[in-house]
Image 1 (cartoon, rainbow, N blue to C red):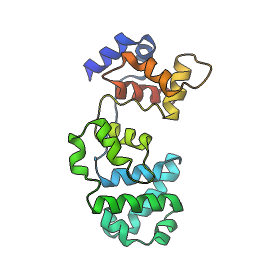
Image 2: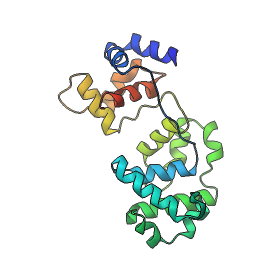
Image 3: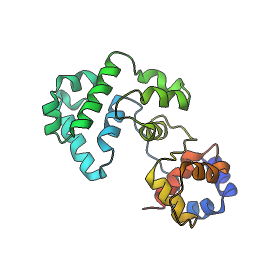
Image 4: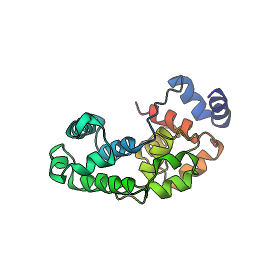
Length: 196
């Protein structure tokens, strides 16, 4: 990690200042499996506190609290809705469960795939877009060079840290991040911390 920090500090004076203020890089990783993707769907567009309650209710609804494709598919959509999931998220999680159960989405092969291949595999599931795939790449597969250009937090942090009047678009973020490669995940983590 020292190499990444030194690279970013040398490449970008704004990041250097931010890294010095925030301190040590302490990203938390999740297991790169089915449950993590279910969690990602539950957490979409919700506050962390609300999403955590819904996720915990969903886990409590399945025997043994083990979120597996088979366990999810044994729940009725009505039971999933009772846990607090919207109709849409219920459909997304059930689609994820079906695709995983029949092997269209194979978590065991994801670590060997390129970022683009992982994104293509994950986004075949209803409700999983590029943003969710980026989060999975960063926080589950531990990829060091992911730049989530569609993330509102990243856009806000770049606007704030670089004194921009407007939120930057994807092209502007990619241009700004040209010097961050191959450590865009690390840069993103520090940008998110700037919003705390």
